[in-house]
Length: 310
Image 1 (spheres, rainbow, N blue to C red):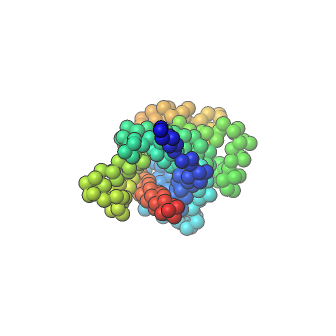
Image 2 (image 1 turned 90 degrees about the horizontal axis):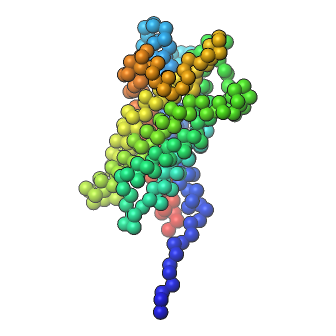
Image 3 (image 1 turned 45 degrees about the horizontal axis):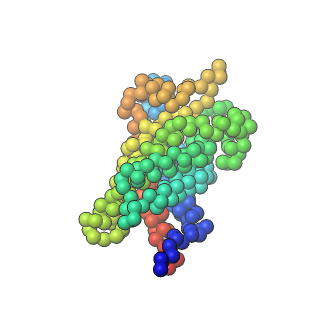
């Protein structure tokens, strides 16, 4: 007698949304720790652009910028735009990590492995979709962080992330929420490709070499490598994204850059190719720890959830 075919157990609602919830919590945890460094990073990029335009000499040292923020705005100045940063994680990181984990699990071969190519494709897809969802919050964050660098009469003075959203829609139109979307998407695709795929790849290779399964040292090494790669590869796109999202029209109503390619061309002509990596040490200490904290918290919560369900 033929045996009845076995069907895969139906996934519960929680198991479907769990990767997204864990991703959002992981990103928000990392952002709460890293926000002061992110503020310094944005200010360095803006100051580098201002100095290049004016031809003046000045320092873009993170220590100089740190002292400028502290003297002008005190400790709270380092947390300017934190609500926008957290909102960005709710939309962007929830989406990208949730999508990556969902695609990763769906791509597993019968033996439970996922090829390097599929890991890369999952990471790029997650970055692309997540950045589209998170761009409005990212735009509000950049503008709130850049506001204090503008003359008083040119500041936008958004009260919070919700005020930023409503004013952008009212004053510039809904589509403006996706200003700078090109470099945001490019940055996210590159960052996720350099962060998520290498993290899983390094862990798998170390597991095979050591004969263990995702030890603390394995996760730390994997997250450290992923953090460096994501910082180095994504900084040029982050630099361009910052310039496009914070730009304002001049007296004739003309914007300084027409788009991604124009901004790249003008930035490299004015600041040199190496100018795309201005503030790399600060950016590294913003991106690498953020990536490491996010990945480690994600792994911890995922494993905790698995243990709790048994």
